[in-house]
Length: 245
Length: 375
Image (cartoon, rainbow over all chains, first blue to last red; front, side):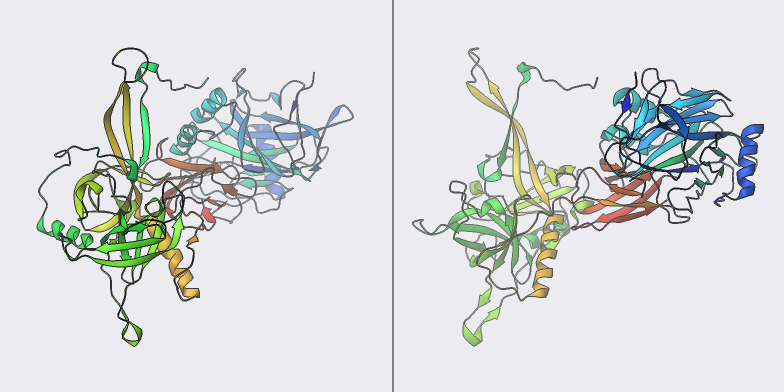
């Protein structure tokens, strides 16, 4: 039976990507959304020479899930799922950022709290027959996907203690501000483009297109000896922005 | 499940919140911390004494002369003084007194005290503070002139530290009508609720007076006492036969709040010449303001979504007890912190996945301007 996740208000859609390279990496912050980098991202995803993920937004239409373009504008009642696949073994957190800025971890849940992902395996969010449904709140809803190689304690605590809501108490907010996984020597590049398009922070990416089954691909660039691989203590976040009109 | 705090019935304590006007002495003689004071400190504190006045009040229906009600301290040489609002209001009727007189003693004997009429200019009900204007006109007609009043130097209540020396100057009822000074330390600071806590003796009549540091600068206004009283059931019948007092904490309103009121008064004076109002203006409480703003990339100025932003007590490390208010940014990088905070200096923290932690000092004013954080 389908369960609707009404707490997630999704709006319009932009797939943005942001990743953080190795600690030793020199500061570079150029957005790479040109054709050559798009091809490179897809190539790295396939040949596994760098950690990479593909993300696909699926919309429920007439009982079937069909890929939709990142620029799609969603209406109240629309239902979606997020499909992703990594080319590496790691850990994934997915956080919803509401239009008012409230954050809730959608993946993993507390039962079971398993968000280890295996290479080449396709995952859907929410799992099973659940979908994410847009309610009547308009604005931009963000799905923040964080790739890591080790668990983030502040997030795990929020999943256990507060249903995934982040910074719900002073203790949890302080724990999050205190540290955990941090990234050094990184100057992020935020999106140059308007909502509805692919965006990135110091990561190479390939924007997804309507009906393109591969979806959008994000990959960690191989720079300054990073090898394009996430190391313990590093994270690679990227965002899926969904526009609800 | 979240842990909860429970209290057993056997340890029920009655915590009495009382205005100083209702409080009884809480420190026995000799409890006030003693120690050597340098001549310089003594001199500075004595200068503040000259600016601290006895407040006498009278309602129009009262028989006889005005009577002592509390204390006030002059903060501007043109005769602007601050006191507690509750000093100026009749607790029984809830109405303000019709006549307010400030008595300044030229010396500690108070034998040659000079009395000035005063009117209320500005009140802040939430923080229990009021600004008074003393009628300091001397002479009549063309011969009239304004007297320059003694003032206390304004201090920085945000910068005081625990265990700093503190001197309470006022006119406690038990001390008669002469100015009375005692000494204590800063026991605690509650930045969110705008209190400075002290072990210095605060009793009936100290309300609205001065709390100064060792440089004689005003850092607080004695406002209330919280006493810890426990019922004693001697015969075991379940009803208290007596109450035992375990101690009390004195609470001061930080001088920062007075500075906010003076600033407000100054701005209004810039617009119109200050005249004696028929009714005092009530300001919206400057006690707390809601902080909002935007987080942007330092590289391309684009909004950062999902950043956690928090205000911490100035200079403190982030912890559950120092984090005063927090909030997260939305897709446009906008945030609204979840709890209003009093104006003042804070350490601003922001963190977003994949970005370096932002740390900076920020001055929150009332009204608060939106913050812009680049990280």
